[in-house]
Length: 155
Image 1: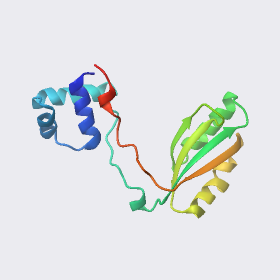
Image 2: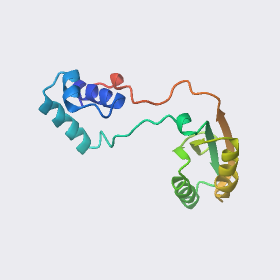
Image 3: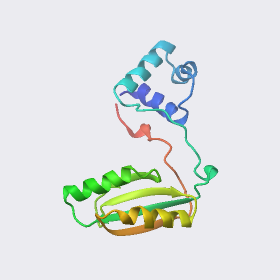
Image 4: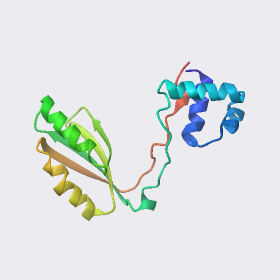
């Protein structure tokens, strides 16, 4: 990946629907060269998909919650059970296996505290491999992920 590829990716992270003609103009490449680079990055998995960024509050998801989860054990069966259950929960936006005191860090978006209570009582706490949960409410978002800083990468 060179400087031009990183520039293309930076622009696509800002606007995944930019017309190829405009993208090629912004990076200073011919239309065919720019298109070829984008297709190569799609084929090799550098670009995995295109999506819209939706404002969660605009669709009624007012509450963002971070949840630290500790499992009863580190046996493969307990981890697999937990991961399968979490992957099936659409309210879970992200789930990361982490190091430290807890085993997983999750991000969940719900409409209100009652919806989080329902999520916690009726789904999360029903997973038998969980031994401890720590809930952190997000009071406000200072910065949200909008794409990787490709300027830091080297050729």
